[in-house]
Length: 299
Image (cartoon, rainbow, N blue to C red; front, top):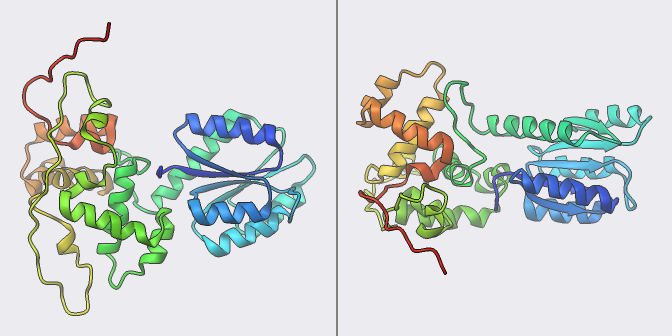
């Protein structure tokens, strides 16, 4: 499941088709619904970050859907789509929890910018970053990492509610937690080494995934998910990711001090950060020294 999820609720098939193609091209996991009932089923299953909600629906009106959406998922951002002359409806929608509204006919480019802006706001509610270093929460691996990190850093966490904020179901936590315990951050990648390698330069070869030993500190009494059990000093990729995270979430980051904390040089930090800013979490993976063999193109 993508970290960028949008639900489009409209009974106009042409509008749905245009919006679906547009947001799929922008990297969103797109789901659609043509009426209120289908909208709630899709929202419950897909846990979208953003909902584009048409006010006029054939079964139930948009305000009813808005009320149910915000009751089920308070964190979801809803943008209501209205017809011309529906200012009163738009104002009422804002009172009921919609973040914004757009009028038909809408400008697709402006709507896309609006969605991206609110998606960034959604992520800022999860991890507040500075403007100096990037920390791309739309990267699915980082999104999963922050999901697990939130559970482990929350005293007596309510996994169901935390899962909802990140757009997952409760079972997803146990699946991801098991994989990360076994393989470290590398366990959060769904793709194989071959598929990941295709995202990198042709001359780069990734090291194979392998199990990573994990110290087993005793949790304090009554604490099921201690943060000390989340940070694995044997996982080099996690150390790199935590270093990137600290640089991006500190108000006035001092890179020299951050590098000393993680036992890495400034040169290595900037090398890794260059990869990270361009490739996300995949840029932090271990790479095999030397050049990968070039394969002969098919005849």
